[in-house]
Each structure stands twice: as structure tokens, then as C-alpha cells.
Image (cartoon, rainbow, N blue to C red; front, top):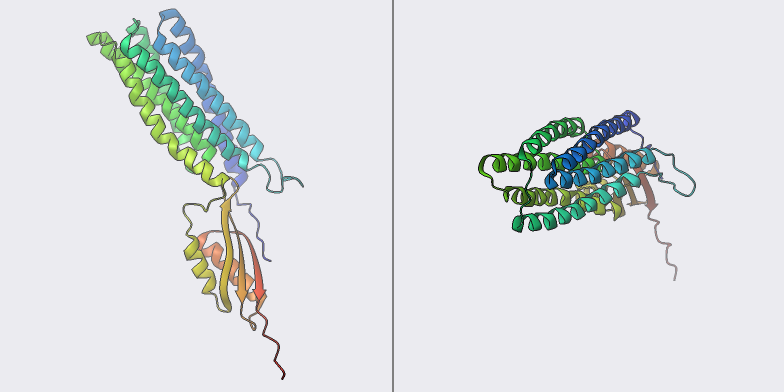
Length: 300
């Protein structure tokens, strides 16, 4: 068998960057949550209080994402030989499901407001909504560059995007109420925001479930990899090929290679491992070479 280290250069530094980004965004959102809650109580704005509830769920989601990122760095044990990398995937799935529950609550509240629009102080509502939008854009900029490399962080990023859309909805609705007295603008904006959140969170839930079911990473083609392995001189066939992810990082591959009787198994292992690293960027590899034996001569 051939194995190579799954540890990439700079991987630890990237995790620390991710945790720092989550910590910064958590502090920003927690601070604004308090401000929005106080403003909602003082102005009697149900919109601000509802958005504060939205913010509360997001602060909780960011705390889950941060805790999962910390947990995923724990070393492997005899009982958990792959470590805790899947903690981030579970956190991403939980955050995606929280987003769906949140959208359900937004839709229910929006329906109530559509038929019975509440009276709000649109001026303070506009001021707090604008401040929230600025803070949310700062949070988006902090998480933006990490969002594609870590599924857990992508879940947190979608929550912040949802917050930004919520702030835009609050600002737009308050302007329409302030200028035209259109109180139905608030629930209408909520439907639009909820639809966008559902659309964006579907991919997060789908990818989380795919990894938990040990599906092949989307950027890798198993048929192509099998063909490249079978193209190595001395390999008759490749079977039991499996490719999966533990977390959001490096893929893992295992395979059996049927070798020709005269083939050098050590050479096959070296060439297969090198090919997978060079052509497919797969470095965590376990390959078993099964040499075919010639049949015993038959004597009459």
C-alpha cells in the first residue's frame, strides 16, 4: 500500500485565519443585535424586533461555526481515526437547516403583516437599517475570501448575506413607508429576501449531505481517474475506486489495481501516487496492488 500525508503546507494558518474571521464577524453581529433590540423596543418597530430575532439566530449560527472550526483542529484518536474534520460539515448542515426554519418564520410573519401592516416609526427604522447594512457589508468583506474553501464558513457567509439582504429590505421598506406610507412594502420585501435565502442555502445543504454520504468531490471525475490509473504500464484494471472528503479540505482516494504478472509493484505504486498528485491534486492515497498469478500447468 502507498500512503501520503494529508497535511498541506499552511493548512493550520488557514484555519486560524478562518477562526479569526468568524470571531470578528461574531463580535460585529452581536453588537448590532443589542443595538437593534434596544432600537426596536424604543421605537415600537416590529420590523426591527423581527430582524433582531433574525440576528439572534445568526449570532448563534456564527457561534456554532466558530466552535466547529475549533473542534475540527483536534487530533485524531484511536476511536476517531479521521479526527474531527466532519464537525465543520455538520455545522454547515445545521446552519443551512436553521436558515430554512428562519425563512419559514419570516414568511409566516410577512403574511400577517401583509393583511395587517403595523404602524412603525420609519425614520429611526431607516437609521438603524442603514447602520445594519454598513456593518453587514463589513462582515461580508471579512468572510468573502474564505467562503469557497470551507463549507462551514460558507454557511456563516450565507447567514451574513441574509442579514445584508434583510438590512436592504428594512431600508427599502422604511423609505417607501416614509415617502408613500406604503406599509405593505415591509412584508413584500420579506418575501423577496426569504426567497433569496432559500435559493442560496439549498446549495449549502446539498453539499453538506453529499460529503456526509461520502460522495465524490464535484471537481473530480472518477471515470477519468480510473482511466488514468489503468493507463499506467503494467496495470490491467482498476476496481474498488473510492474518492471522498472528510471535511472541506483535501480529498482521500483508495483503489485496487490488478497488475500484470511481470509488473513491478513498487514502480506501479510510485507512478500511480505521483500521477494522482500531479494530474488530480490528490495526495492522500491508499492503493492496493493485486498481482495476477499464472495458472498452474495442467498435467494429464
